[in-house]
Image (cartoon, rainbow, N blue to C red; front, side, top):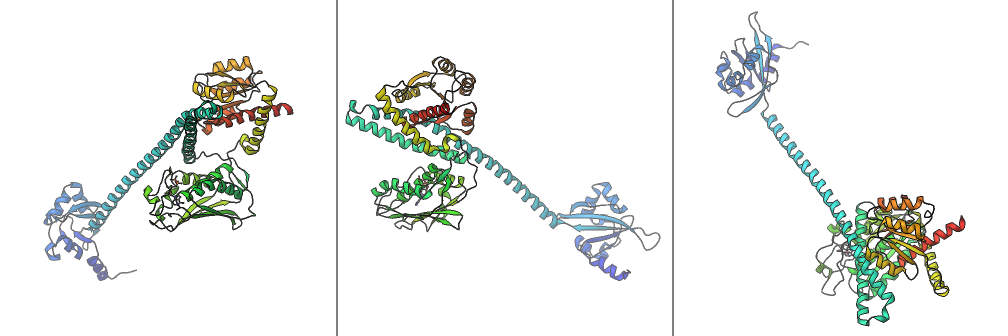
Length: 555
Ligand code: ADP
């Protein structure tokens, strides 16, 4: 395509970049409009002048010999300079373009003002740097938060276990006194001891809640599922809590569908969810109000549980927060009004545990409420959805799967055996207790000595000796023995003919999954978590002894 020379000349004249034509000695022969504006001279003023006529520009070019030379040679490529009092940033290129006559050897110098682009670029770079810094800060804060959260979980876990050990003694001693020494003690002292036992129960509940929260946070909440009737669990819980509700004249109204299918879930944990929701409904409602509880199947694939109270309500911005551990809404005086004083206030753990349990069953929990307003009772509605058929990998072990049935059997056997023991002067089964904690040994002995013949050892080595020489019917062993560790003791016992079949139960104030797993792997038959009530301990022992008897019968 042929272009009219005039058109080309006009394009050059009006081009938005600055174009200078230079002769080979650097003299300017032409400057387009942009060039004239850029340097602040007219075409005529610039024509015939050497580059040094533009002193500031010239100084910048001659700062490097090579730059000035390549300008004139037509070999300058993308060279950036800052010039002028306004500090303009320019991008320069030069190219030989020949000339009209044979002697004419022109160079075109193209100067692009990139000041705005540079400023923008600088700003972007600055922003990118800021973002990078903020990102680094975020990553650091996230890591710090994670560390803090894990520290908190560890602290809770350690604190709970440290509390559990003395609690076992308090509960153990007080229950022994209550069960066996009523006649020997002044009634007023006896009542004090009953108070101690009740306080220990309350503290035990708090400690267990703290442990549950750490288990949920560390994803180690173990469920023991079985087919359960959710409606029946709910009704049982309502019945139990009704005594507490009656004190505040609060009534529970149940609307539970009669044809609910069975649910594969953890009975005790579901009971715990209902207990937490119901006790909150009572705590945060005025005297004389009512609580509605309904359970129905929704859309044919999930249970929908609703607990609706007529209490103080919860502001919308708190709806999510209340499910966080240790979170409590506002100050406790918001939990009371001019009409009535509520029993509000707790440890702030109930709802986070409920959420953890519901989610572990594959469900969802949330609250709906019009918000809290002093003196008004908008009420709150807690909703739970649970899948009819939860596809969950249960963390189970066989000692728990038939829990209730086996416990009933053990209970019956215990009562039967206790009766017959007194009647027939039966020989007491020998139980070897390996535990370095003197107090623990003393309490267990007091609990068990009526029914069992107790022998004790403070460490694994002595425990092994007694096991070989005295052939106990059962061994109870602390999971944290000094010296020869309990897993090795257990493996040695399992490897020897004389001790191979003795039921062994580990006990600990901690139930870390890996510890429990190791215990079972080393050959233990059960793992008992402290603190245990005297009844629980006796039941466990009978259950193990019965299992062994059953095995021997079928062998
Ligand atoms: P807490 O032991 O303190 O009751 P929760 O985890 O059970 O702990 O509840 C967290 C907070 O949520 C409570 O402190 C209370 O402020 C609020 N809350 C829970 N249930 C209700 C309710 N039914 N009505 C009003 N506020 C409630």
